[in-house]
Length: 268
Length: 171
Image (cartoon, rainbow over all chains, first blue to last red; front, side, top):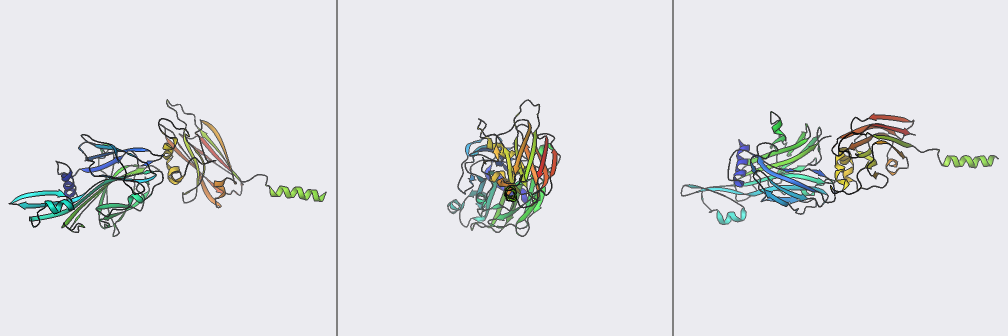
């Protein structure tokens, strides 16, 4: 399944084991907060069950925090344990913070004397480490974004401006203004362009306490838009993956983009 | 004699006997719980589109404690926070104040209140929202017309965090 493969590839690059499709996620202690400089804490893990820590931690190597004014924010007290990573963020500005782990690079495979070779890196290291004209060279652009959003005070959009790389969620409804029973609309972009006909999977947390995943599957329209009316309050996991042969990186012939967001839906 | 009467009448007309006003009685129930905290309460007016148009009262912990500044829990007043609180710079003179104890509280707002003065004539809803630490949250809605052509009385009864709430609108 398309979904399984791309996640497995992204995970394979991050972790030494398993090719099965686990879910990556960040979970903030809260998404709506008030105060001069309130703190939140964020868990980062990879697991099958939402939102339980029972597999491996999500490494914090490529953690990117964007403050409400667009500047880089700071993670404090980071730690990686057996099943999860955790870090704190002091929300020193009013507005919406974007907290993301972004792995943006290239994967290549080729053969050297009949032996398969695998490589992962970026555009800079590609030039020096991957032999040009290698036998059966296949290069894939891989961008994997796992993120969440927290608003201190009134929400704003500055930190949510798309970077133009990989799959991204652009608000029509603000991602920290979600309420049970109300519809929310978002747009998905792939490398900065509307991602039409993109399939998303949305699952509410607390899977341990029910008999089915109860996932919602939604497809974006020609403008990359989709809407969902939240059935109940809770922490929701949203995922989308895209695979095709339209990479934005010139070295690659294919791209695999993956996106995960954790969204909190509050009660009325 | 006639002249004197005219002057007196003239004075009467310049200052009406009473201005239009809202009289709100809010009861905070006495609760027998092991750990009691006075509730945070927001009283605001929303229009037919559910947009907040006036803030009348916000009671919250004004002092800092080692748990943090009292504003930290304002988002627990979920509806108020979303419709108004998160863009409001507290404290607001004449609107915000400290939390109040269990009992009956009488509030009076007349047409000169800056928040009410700005309201266009129409149908509104007075919303009373209460949230209590290690307790629950309750929201009551009382519809009314402003300004009132005739006296109106609207009542609502809370079940958990609010008691009897009565709104009297005087023309």
